[in-house]
Amino acid sequence: MLANIPLTEDERAAVDDRHAALDALLGRLADVPTPAGPTPRQLAIPAAAKPLPIVGVIHPR
Image (cartoon, rainbow, N blue to C red):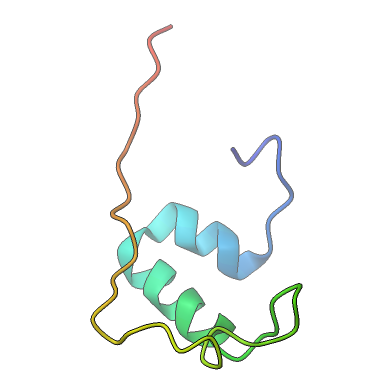
């Protein structure tokens, strides 16, 4: 993934450090407008909603 998609430092940390960095990244992005205009906070996503789990995938060589 890192070879094909340019990532910001925060995004790369989320890939490398997994859950803690991903939670921090999502918190920082909560007030960044989506392409449609509203921020994730303005979309009123229920507080009980949780992001999908990150599952490691090992590709056989």
